[in-house]
Length: 360
Image (tube, rainbow, N blue to C red; front, side):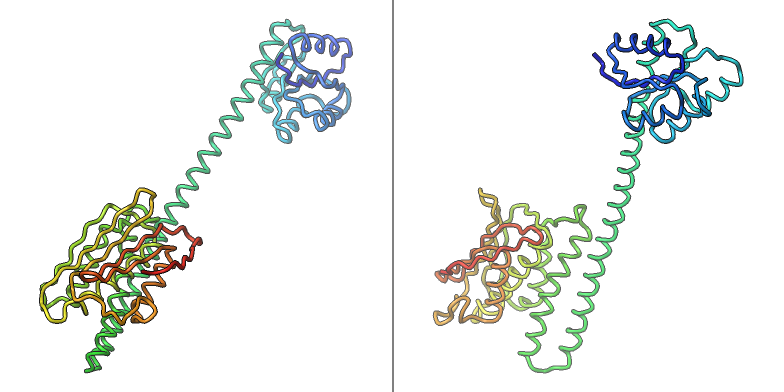
């Protein structure tokens, strides 16, 4: 049983009942019979048929062709004409309504069956085609929108990097007005922190995926920058071993600042009486998906009276805050130099989790 609903519009009662019997034998549902176009429009509103089988000459002021035009415009329901009229003028008018079939009386039951099936099939195919075209147009619109947003995001990262560079230049110029080494060191530390953030925005700008950067590729540039700032006259080697780690901006900036601060601290304080030493950085993903960051140096170590982070420098307190921002944990081992171990998960935007666990 097909169960599609066919509304019959026929002003000859006997003919209408015959058509109804044939359609029901074929498995269709006939919700109603109308003898006029005006009545048919009302029945369509009430019954929502799948197709309309309509005579052209009907009772009332409106004929079937006029009704078919309204049905097509208002309801998008396939109309099949069933009429005895086939002269040129009527056919010409009927064609303008784009009927799905045109059956002449007297009709054969087989012709009725085939034409109604074809009408329903063609209408369904037309709807599917229109849906496909709309989806294709929507997808094209979405692709264009994504390209525009991609371009805009790249421009934002580029402008942020340029603005950070302006701040770096202003701080560098300001530092030249002071002869105090302490003030110059203060400016240099902040310049390097800003540069570490600017480098991340530059990596984002260059990345194929604006959601994340390859953090492992970011590290050599950071280490090169720090070496040129603090390691000009010594032979402290910065070594690193890292898995390929992708981080979003929310995680990359605090992680970059942490590494910047701890490596800077080692370069400035770990090797005061010797011109050589080693700083080693490890970055890898654990089995549970978390990220482990190890920063070692074989320098003199942190003095016993300095407790991390409560009695440490502002830099240590900043590192502790950034680790908490990442929802991570940090441990300090003072045996044989200095070893910081930080474990964290990549942050999801707007889902910062603060963990305040004990520090060894």
